Image (cartoon, rainbow, N blue to C red; front, side):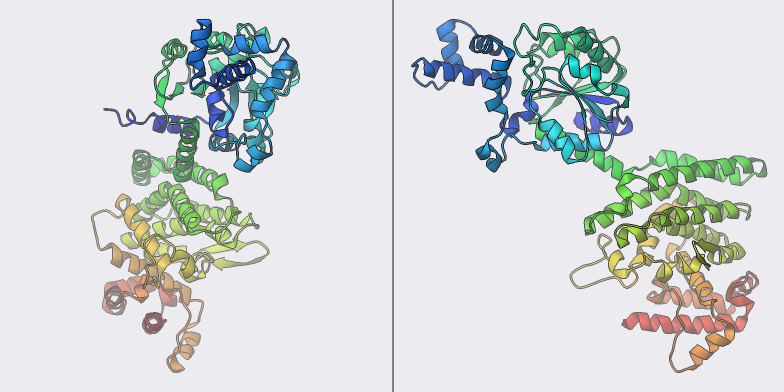
Length: 596
């Protein structure tokens, strides 16, 4: 069994998301049914009822059966309406009461845009749907579109077609085949629907040839001209999805067969379009590249970084990924406007991590196996992400602060790769990287993006990560904990043979804290620590509460060859005394973190 065979709406959602603007909607009266606007069949039976009662016939439980016995024929919408009203204007007046809401309707929420109308409007607003063909007379769809800020091009007659904005240039094009209920030129009898004007036929031929189709609320039983247009469409460049309640009607069968349409069983139009819109939105929010695509990228980076002759190609691949990252970060769903909620925070977090994952893994590879030639493009990328994020100055502060989170992820992944390879000089250069600031003096990267000094580091914010806060517990280092969790998942791509990831992460953060402390001279630091139990300010993460990790780091920095390597790389200002002062300060900060 195919992974999609049990749920064609998943297939439709993927196709709609990946082929923005390709699908046109074909909507019938079933779409407006839940709004209290009757279908053509229901209007037919109600007209039969009203006429019969006016003639003195007793009320019937089943007016369709009564009509068949009385006239030996099926109740026919076109026949009855033609007998009741000789002109289109009269027919419009009859239909008006079925479509226009009165005060009671409005109070009960009837004859107003439905869940389906609003879901469609959202798909149009976000660019997934641009063309809508409908047999409906009502204006519920246009009203829903305008509620979300979309002004559609609406064609209701040959006259409006001739003066309408071209299909190619309209962000939303609505073709109302049967007209508008407020226009006397509505089409609704069999004779009127037997053939369309040539201009309509030409437009439908183009739409059905150039677009995929999503059909909902139209049974295929009415409108010979529309059936003919669908059957004569020469190409099937994109799929047709036909939503069906119950069995496929006789009118729809040949069209579904000819277009090789995918039948989509539905309960009603509301649940169908709401589910479709939600699934498309989920795809937009995750925007996750397939693991295979990311693995291919990581494999390419490993291959190119190992051979100097591929240095140009390496630069090109990284540049392409940087461009993709910038595009993802500029997505509408990451705009900093909007209200705060825990759910929205988690949604944005997932989006940023998904967007940054491919490049972060690539940077981890470059940190692990690079030779310093990559450092310039790493530095330019991190600066570029920050500069791009800071160009937007208005919005909710939390969302504005999170815009530089991808830069934090890139810095952390590259830094972990450097620490894994013991490329200490480059790691010190990374933490010391000068970060330009508009109209202000530059800051070092460690004072801009590292733990406490990153403006998005608020513990109250990061304790909203799922699972971090329970009834009796809040994390003391939630940002550091989350970065560890994320990079541990990504680390298989660049950390090699499984190691103690927690200790590696502690080592990375401890060295970041050391560089952060280096803004103090040795004499300044000594003076601060000699004054009682004072401590010098420095950013400390998980290592502040992980005593086993702290003991391992203290051992490395006191008596092993690593101590001399770090001093030679520029850590602790190259001073053994400064390094010892750092260890004392780390101990004091850890005690403070334990009790705060």
